[in-house]
Amino acid sequence: MAITVQRAPLDPSDPAYRGQAVYTARTLRAYDAVVVKLSNSLVWRCPARDILAQYDRHVSAAHLDVGPGTGYYLDRCRFPVDAPAITLLDANLDVLRYAARRLERYGPATRAADVLKPIDLEPASFRSVALSYVLHCLPGSLDAKAAAFDNVIRLLAPGGVVFGTTILGTGVEHTRLARTLMRAYNRKGIFSNLDDDRSALEHCLADRFDRYELEVSGSVALFAGWMA
Ligand SMILES: C[S@@+](CC[C@H](N)C(=O)[O-])C[C@H]1O[C@@H](n2cnc3c(N)ncnc32)[C@H](O)[C@@H]1O
Image (cartoon, rainbow, N blue to C red; front, side, top):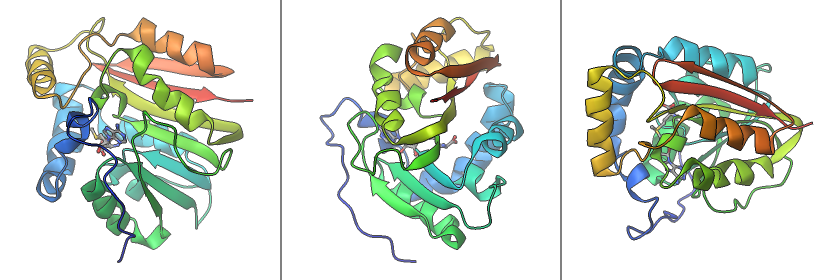
């Protein structure tokens, strides 16, 4: 399958660069086994089935997936129609290639973009937007990361939902292994979440959405916000 070649949007000098640079064709081949299956259950204590259930609850016929990784959840979730219009947005071209190939049956559109910057897609054109395991990869405070919410809210049709998950750095009960891994990933810049906590995330949601839900499972916050 040919996907349109686009320019990588992030320069190595950009603070957001390191949060997406680790995903290569090689690491993506291991991602489902190591992150989706093992780490989600054993390290972060939020099994993939709970994240998949979140997708099943919220995906729509016009869906934007920010940071799709391997496309695991989109491949397995239940869409409300047989032929959903799916757009994959990522700063990493390897991710876009990998996920688009896996989801070829849906003919997804791809967009290389940094979610922290305004996104050049049709306003109000999506009924669901996923940000699964993306916020903990973004640099800065949760207030700064919330630019990602602002950028995707502009793309959301009335009544649409933004949903996702993020690993919190503080205020949750981490296992010793979770704490060790999280610190190592923060040193490498793969994660930037040591100061992310539930109440800051809740403020971000409450300030932007007409209605929101937030729950914590292990080290992970699961959230959804709706615009009227
Ligand atoms: C941890 S993976 C999450 C993959 C998948 N959604 C999941 O839940 O397992 C983070 C994803 O976000 C993307 N990403 C990280 N920083 C980004 C940015 N600034 N703009 C757009 N995508 C970004 C990465 O390239 C990667 O696809």
